[in-house]
Image (tube, rainbow, N blue to C red; front, top):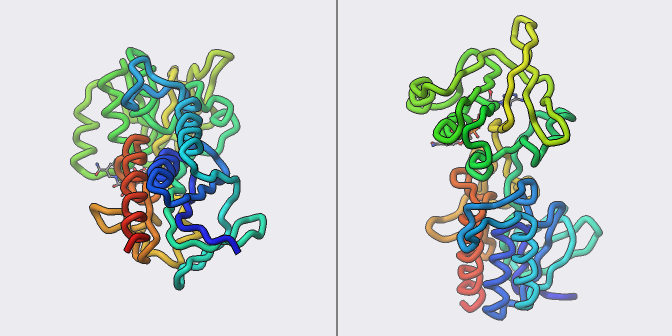
Length: 306
Ligand code: NDP
């Protein structure tokens, strides 16, 4: 049976960067790409904040270049979704949805997190055309325009504050009459003159045309339906880490993020490492995920050499 020294699970910035470093360290990495090769970035358009691209870079181009770089350096990139793992002892066992069992000496988990969406067909239709789940990534494109942020947690407040520095007006669409966010964040939001909170409101439909989002149709708790004019519609209703398949074996926090021993990427099982959004609920940026992927490969190398 094939024995894999370093299995990397996940094809986003963390996984590809781990593969680049592991391949260069002659760890003969195998990378399983999963359902969404390229990761969350592929749901956006232009990336302007990834260093090294003076004019910005198309997100899909960036990811396919990372993938090609990993492949050129010798990483064995395969399709496949992990359906089950056994981390009870070494070597570790990983089962894929095609029934293949992989036996590995070290594992780097880089399966990321997924933004939560409302689940409206119109929201799906305008993803990348005004609907976004990352203000830091996409807010810049809405400078001077009116936008909306859905959610009332710390992320929504942070995103609304970030957007308020760029946009003319920011609506916060909050489904209750209170914010879930910390008091400090609430105060900052309420002090921003260009943020308007729409309390007790839910989104019925994202409105738009061939060029993108033009507004949103909302419904208040009392049944009143009304429209707002916005060109950007940002979701900030939470993320969920893609850790379900591992959580039986690894320590996770109360939200399901895999716990690693800072400053490294070691999980609660020796030889299993985690990098990127799967262990980082705070920064959630491609450049951070890439950096964590690098650290995971270096940690795996050290572990394997020991
Ligand atoms: P949260 O789960 O804290 O908040 C989610 C928000 O979205 C809530 O207001 C929730 O409403 C709302 N929401 C959920 N589902 C829907 C829906 N279907 N329709 C409309 N609204 C919806 O997620 P966050 O991402 O904000 O935060 C995650 C964690 O990260 C938290 O612990 C947070 O404190 C932390 N964090 C800390 C930061 C900081 O300290 N600077 C920055 C960002 C996050 P409701 O309240 O009604 O449930």
